[in-house]
Length: 287
Image (cartoon, one colour):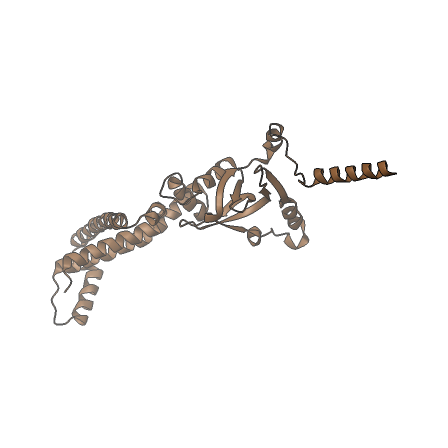
C-alpha cells in the first residue's frame, strides 16, 4: 500500500508541475529543465501553492466558525461522498481537510496562470502571444534557450531582418516569425534570398520578395489583407551555419569598402587563344 507521505509528495509535485507548465513566467525555463531540476521546481511551486491553499482554507474555516456554520457546503458534500463510496472506512477530519486543501491548490495552479496572463495583456496592451515571447526573452541569452534565440530579440529591438546562411550556401533574409521553445525549425517571412559565392563567400542577392508582397497586397482579391503565412520558409536549425542582422540601408556604404569581385576565368581560355594565334601565324608564313 502506498504510504500517505509518498502520496502527499506526489500530489504536491503534480500541483507544482501544472502551475510551472501553464504560467508564462515559469514555462520557458521550466520546459528546458530536466531530471531533478524539474522535480525540484515542481516540488517548490507545489509547496508554495499548498501553503497558499492552507491559508485560504484557514480563512474559510474562520469565516464558517464566525457565522456558526461548522461544516460548510464543501465539507458536508465531501463527507457524503466518502460515506457513500467507502461505507466501511473511516476518514478523520484532518484527512478531509487535507483533501480540500489539495483540491484548492489544484484549482489555484490551474487558473492563476490564466489570471496572470490576463493581467499582463491588460497592463501591456499586447496580445497573449507577445507576452509569452517577452517572457521567453529572459532566457534568450542564456544556455537555457535554443540556438539563435538571442538574435530573434535583437531583430525585434532594432526592427531589422535576419540573414540566415544555410549549410548549402543559400541565404534567406527576413523576419523570424515563429519558433517553439524546443526549437528545431524557424519560420521566416522572406524579404530577399540568394547565396554566398564559393570563392569569396560574397552575398549575392537573387530574389527580392517585397515587390511580390506589394503586388499581391494591391490585388483586388486581397483587399482585406494578405496572409503571408502561406509564404513562410521553414529553416531547420541544424542547417543554419550562422545568422546576423541585415540592414538594407547600409548595403551601399559597405559596398564602397568591399574588395572588387573576382571574375571567373576559363583556365582553358588563354592556352586556346595562344594555339589559334600560333596556327594563324604558321598559315600566314606558308602563304
